[in-house]
Image 1 (cartoon, one colour):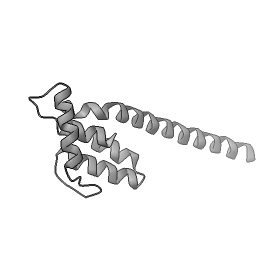
Image 2 (spheres, one colour; image 1 turned 60 degrees about the vertical axis):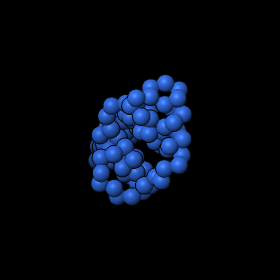
Image 3 (cartoon, helix red, strand yellow; image 1 turned 180 degrees about the vertical axis):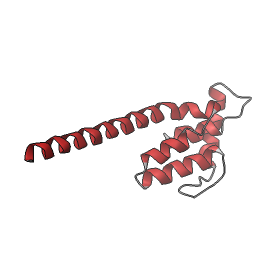
Image 4 (cartoon, one colour; image 1 turned 60 degrees about the horizontal axis):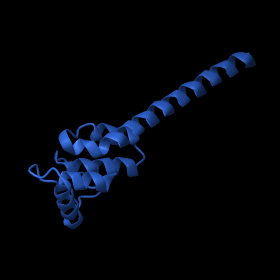
Length: 111
């Protein structure tokens, strides 16, 4: 996901076809990525670096919140991943609620 998004960040606005995508992939391959930096900027690279840092720390919610800050054409490569991550967060929350509900029922049975 990260490499696809990086490639899209480097596609010039004037190139929309296969040539633009090839150019974007080439530029992304030779550009130095600010991986895991606490970058505070708003560029696509900075957002991806912060997302990667959050994911390495196991903080999916923070990574999704960062990803939601990406707009425009550069958001397209992240769209599917963000939806799957949000689905995962919702499933995790549902599991926590079921666990709590089961604990409450268990406590009632013990009394």
